[in-house]
Length: 196
Image 1 (spheres, rainbow, N blue to C red):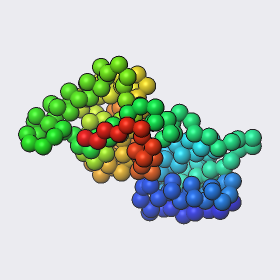
Image 2 (cartoon, rainbow, N blue to C red):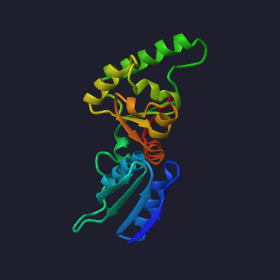
Image 3 (cartoon, helix red, strand yellow):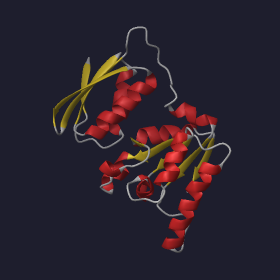
C-alpha cells in the first residue's frame, strides 16, 4: 500500500491525491494534519463505496487508510455529486444578496432562503462559500430555514476552507462541512445551477 504525505497541503489536495492513487491501487494511506481533511477523505471513501479507517497520532497528525472492501463495487451513493442532477443546486457566495445596501442585502438573502423552503420541490443541494458560510453559522437568522430545507431532503454544505478563514468551523449550525473537490463535483454535475 502506498503512503502519501499530504500534511500542510490545502483543501482539496488530500482528496484529489487519494482519488488518483485509488485509480492505480485498491488501497492508499494518507497522512494529514487536520480533522477537516480526515472528514473530507471519509466522505470521499463513502461516496465511492470504499472502506475507511483513521488513527489519531496527536492533535495535528492523522493516518487515514482508504481501501476497497471485498465484494465492494465502486458506486455513487445518495451523497455523491451525481445525485445533484435530480434537482437544482444553489451556490451562495455571500452573506447578502445583490449589490447596494448591505442591510437590504441581508434582508433579501433571508427572504430567498425562506422562499426555498416554500417551493413545491426544494433544491437538492445548497452550497455556501466565502462569506456565505456566515449564513450557516451560529447566530444567523437563516438557521431555521436551512434546518427546514435539511428536513425536506436538501443537502446543505459549507466550504471547510471558508469556515476556517472566518473562524466558524466550530460554529456551523446547519449542514455539513465539505471540501472544494466535493463542491466542484456538485457544481459540474448539476442539471440546474443557481449562483448568488
